[in-house]
Length: 393
Image (cartoon, rainbow, N blue to C red; front, side):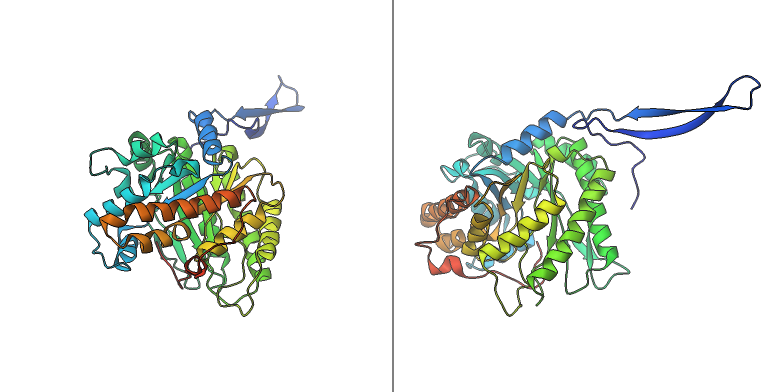
């Protein structure tokens, strides 16, 4: 992967790069004098805007609705309720979600697939404008998916850096203000040092390119739930992965105040014989956060990763029982949408019921972000796990 020859920007700090030592000869004297030259990093054009956008998304009681599934994955969702995977049906489903009255009370950002970013409602209003009216920041998935990583232990790497700068500039013009790039690490496959480094470097390059084009990068190093390992093993791998990610973010001069982290929670493998309590998951997850994530990062927006709707909410709530250096919140897809699909069933007369289901889940996670959620009254559907081995977007 090619390295950029240009110095990246970091206006949020007063650090200096490019320090050099050189010698000067004075006259015919053989004595040498040495002086240090410091080259300042120039300021990013978008730094202030990036920081403001990140703070807006990381606002109290709000989180992110992720509806950035690829057309193929969205098709699987539609198929589960008997609908064909057509653009009309995808547009109808996403319109249902994005036009939910009152959604902005609980949702601060929405991650869109490229198709959705350029779509409008059936009455002609751009989805981007629908979101803005509810004070929800539009975002965009920019990676091009996972492919096999040669030389690894059957692991993968995330593609999409080619042409990312020009695509990001176009997404900004269309109204997107943050971006998402998902890469994964598999514990059953090692993970190998190669896979961890590739994941971290790819995330860092993407983050730098996004910031150069006005988009707040969501940095998503997902440690898959696949496996039968204990929670201690997940913690060990998370520490290694997050350390590598932040090392390369710093190497690429990414402005930490202008990013959001979207990690997986530290849980046992999905096939482990013992389930962990929300308190145990919160303890292990916060331990890694405190050891690896700078407090300059404004928001930690957890992915649900196949947990049930109720589990994802309970675990988030447990992490917010005491103050944290960052806004600890959610960026959920399935854990916000599962009940919605079941309520909708593809029937126009069910749209309002489906939107109420979305508000129920969004409000529950809003309360969890504030540490005030109670599972009392949760129905059995919300408690059903959604783990899929080798899940892809």
